Length: 251
Image (cartoon, rainbow, N blue to C red; front, top):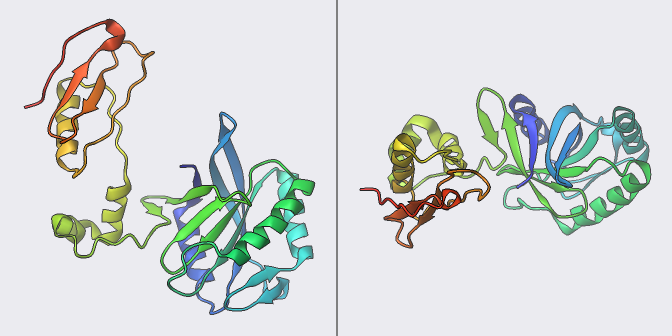
């Protein structure tokens, strides 16, 4: 999944400041859009603009709309610096952690406006709620994963609690629920399945209830091709690029 990346302090401050109001609140984030193979890989935020009260045309508990002149001013700044724009707003109440039909309609207008002013780079929207923070490409409903980066990593999905999970109870006591949520979402890649790699792979497989998924590049010389069994208890390793028929089964 493509990502929306912010400094951890900025993400935390944004969540705290915007959710301190009973009405919906807005912010405009500016950054760089990075694309790979004609697809956005990440949008890295460098700056945030918090609108003053006078910049709102509408502001209630269920809707917030900025004045066109304020949006045009920030857009002109972004165009001068070739920045991507991320329109952020809140749902300041619990239980609504997804974009609403009102959001969809507002994004359509913003997308049409930006296509006329600055069609490049890719722009996005960010929704901040008491449970989590979610993002997507502006007007396209393509999700972006929200990540705060600093001395530690903070996922936008901060509400992924592990309460009641006895299996990870001791880990939660050490790392906390947020730390366990990060561990749960981490993906591990192993390069090379030699003496150390096979042991690490086996231990990782033991930590999962479902079989791990593996892949390899057929163009890499001596790159092991690994397949997990349906039960997740065993797997075979072969070296198809080298024409080897050898296989191994971990003990």
